[in-house]
Each structure stands twice: as structure tokens, then as C-alpha cells.
Image (cartoon, rainbow, N blue to C red; front, side):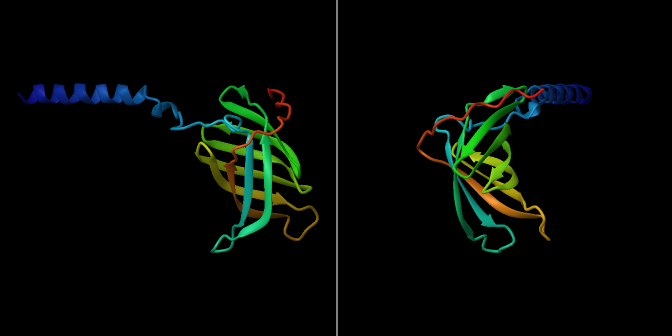
Length: 158
């Protein structure tokens, strides 16, 4: 009786282990993987002071237009343009990494997509020849209901 219970428990454990091993979660597939291009490719980016306890809004809203993505193995890569700059973005699951130039300042951003139409994260701005060479700010991306003129997609990287 005792051996049969151990065998049954061991069989159940093996079955569950196999299911977990081959599930989407085991392969790190995200719960959602929205595209920055579809259904609309125009996003509003807003900035908030990171060191402020209230994270008050910096009055420098930027509209960003993403290109149609190219798929590069596990990443989707985009070019983006704005009236205030341009650059590239890479998406893996719900993580988006952006770099480029805004208001003639170099920046990099790490964002997490939280829904089909929203993302948030941190932006680092480099300021050449300054005592403080960079600033950190919080940032949000919100998809608008509009499409914009598409920039050329990025060239595949090797």
C-alpha cells in the first residue's frame, strides 16, 4: 500500500514537471506581447522627475512614431521619429529598450509594456560637459488613437 502511494505520487510529480517544463511559462513567453506599430504607431511619451516623491510631470511631452518592426530572432526592432529627435528601439516580450536623441540630448530608456496601449519605465539623459553627466527620469508611453507617417524600418543587425 505504502509503495503504491509513493509510485502514484512520483508519477503525479513527473507528470506535473513535464507539463511545467513544456509550458509557455517555461519558455519565458510573455503574457502579452503588444506590438508598438499595430493597431496605431503614434505614442505619447511623458516624463516625471525620478527623485521627487510626487514624481511631478516635466512639461516636455513628446509624440513618437514607430516604424513597422522587423523580427531579429527573439527581438522586434523599430526605428522611431519625433519632431524632437529620432532613434531605434528593440522589444523582447514586454520589455522595450530605446535609444536615440531627443531635444539634441542623447538618451536611453528601459520600459515595460503593462497593457496593449501603455508602457512605463526609466529614461537616462546624457548631458555632455556637465558636472552631472546624466539625469534619470521616469517615463510613460501611451498609445494614441492615431497612426503617423511611418519611418523606414531599421536594417537587420547581425
